[in-house]
Image 1 (tube, one colour):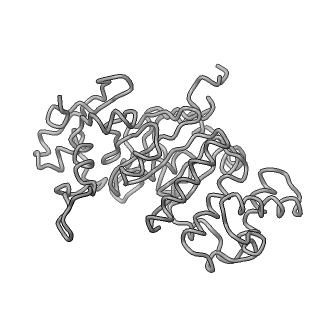
Image 2 (tube, rainbow, N blue to C red):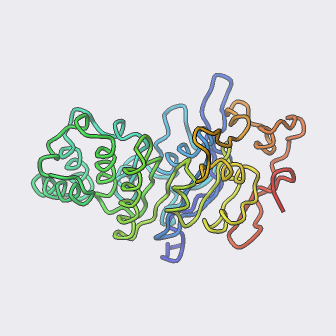
Image 3 (cartoon, rainbow, N blue to C red):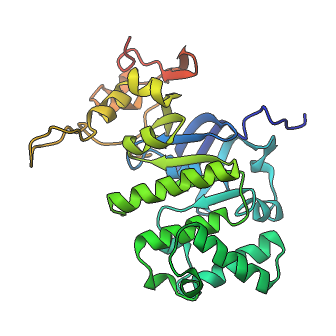
Length: 329
């Protein structure tokens, strides 16, 4: 069936991802399904270790090999299953139709190539420009992400730039080929609040200008509230709640979602006072139970957690993992 513009740009169906271990395969992403509509920003939120980045990297088949592999499901981009792509198709997809903004810009940039050379390499590969045309376009892209003195900066190496400037370069590389989908994996990690706001505003502006969709990975519900249309709450490899942003903040139903919201800093806290925290910790993939994994964190005995709660729709586009202990009325 041909892809039509009214369908989601990205449709992830029952995605499962595992990593090989001495004792066998360990499931890091467990039967996850979601969509990213055209022109919208969808956020995935959760603590470290919940599977957010593994999910994001699965979408462009950038899992660490040979340990990591997709073990089930489909990833439909414009109606075509990325899981079935060969290496040539994947090269055209990455950086072309899908742009990726990585969590740590220094690991995404080559330290021994100037930033201009790295942009030129992308442009020559994906847009068939010659070297001179690509250099002019590289400078234009650096100006577009508001890097001052772009002509001079293009000759600089990543190590001479600040963290915020490096992240702008990574954004320029991700946007170089006018992607239809932007995957932003913790794009503001380790940046101060002012630079973080500038980066997020820039991402939103570029998304609107290019009519692109964005999948934003973060642990910060404040970032979700300000930038996303829809949010997926992920815990221990599963989506436990998903809803339009306004609906989720107004009426969170899963205990984990409510705990995340309660842990957000708020105005009025006394200086040096203790912030609310969630007791316990996210279980490692070696410790996952078959049943509700937030109940596992809250101390429910594993022998009582043998069946996975179903994901049910409790309102328009509002889904929650219906654990009797965790799902509020």
